[in-house]
Image (cartoon, rainbow, N blue to C red; front, side, top):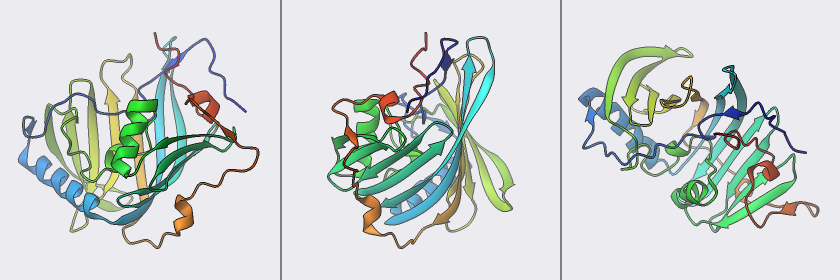
Length: 259
């Protein structure tokens, strides 16, 4: 079963917009308070041996006639560093899983009953392979690495600590960053366990500035994860793909008709 995108053409930044421009935080004009909160979040999240979290995501798209739409989906993420990852994403037309077992990464479209595999031995390697080899990003990929949002490829010209606010009754730091290609915002919990609760990326040079937004809930920083979560067992009639194709996995190719 596949989803068809009409010739009216929908376009957007990628499933999870990556931050490609090589500007290091050391060179960027980031306010000390923003750098401190971001650094604490990166250090804490990167230090966790395992964690699990649920998420809701909204991918904003703009049709060629100017109508703005939001595609909503939800999923869960399970991480066991350095080499185990499970991520799911379920929406109106997609039911996709990513599974890293320590030697291979599998992308499985449950609706299409098709999967694609590529070699990967660490989470960082898996995320890089998805982006560079097949052009497909995992949910919250920028937050899965051992140094979340602290790599030289992050698109950051400036950053500010907007202030304190509340999400779902929890006090959080609101951070905002400007880049060359995208602007991005991050909401991080206050206290000794700084965790991201919301992450928004805005495409600056695409018409109507579509956004990608992901909200995290039910963080568990010491979960008991069954190892079977990281094992892919295809059914006998599952189709193995020799080359990756977004529509054959069952995902919408939102950038296919970009002109």
